[in-house]
Image 1 (tube, helix red, strand yellow):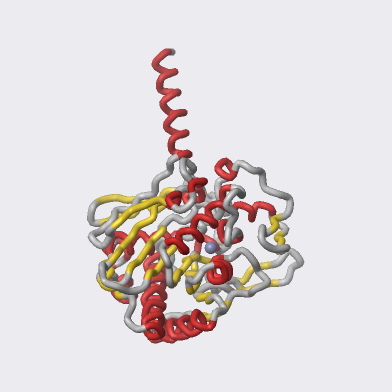
Image 2 (image 1 turned 30 degrees about the horizontal axis):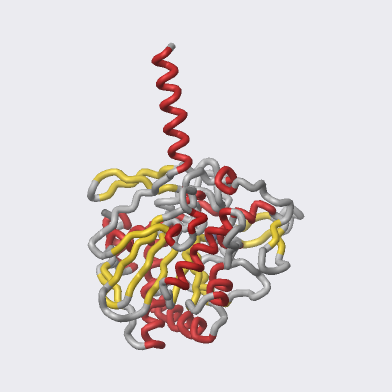
Length: 357
Ligand SMILES: [Zn+2]
């Protein structure tokens, strides 16, 4: 009985510690020159499950600072894996890159609540042996949020509302954040503080959306086509951001890859590309690769789907990143140079696993 009690206690304690200190698997490569935590920019995150690692990749050569964000939504795995590959592989030759691979770390500590058939931990095989990709939820875990969801979500700085109160736990509705607000509002506030303190010149918040090619039924019986947001590059409406976005889109098309250019809708508040651009000096972008896990398939293959495999989505993200950097350099002179990442065709030939540590 005593033995059983000890085992039981160990299980309880270990599951508690997983909930409080969930730590995703990132294996920094030779390009990483510094490491910090998001709570370095806002104390309120310290000791919470939303405090998240920040990686610095500094060339030592004068230039611009680029912020790459993955995992704003933790079910959008190509974004976290693109950021992880960047940290494990890239070498910055000019300027500086800051990477936050798991922007809402609370979301990745729990299962996807939209499709329970997708495993939380997805096994992959890399050169150093088996690893796991974590498929989390789109929002902050309610246990970490502490405050119950409101009946209607209201953006703090405006009168913008959404019917679904759970959107209070969606990081990408909270910008520019609230220093003493709920923990998801504080998370957005901390990211804004990092951007200001580090003098981030340009930032990309990576996302995934439902893939094109499906037709679904509305509740009234009418139908609609999926994939409206897929392959979108959204730019803050600042003139320079729009020009960089246009250059980047042309370059992505040269790879024969799909891309749709859009600009932030000023009426839809709280989104990164709109608010970061408006509340800081950073040129702000958001991109959307197509994730089969966000279709209405019952058992989607989120890693090796025939049409939208993860390697295609990571390859598309990397192409968007390099094209945005080229666009920035065209506007401001050579300010950023990144080496040692695969291009789209290499990643399609060799698989994404090849480029992870
Ligand atoms: Zn998203």
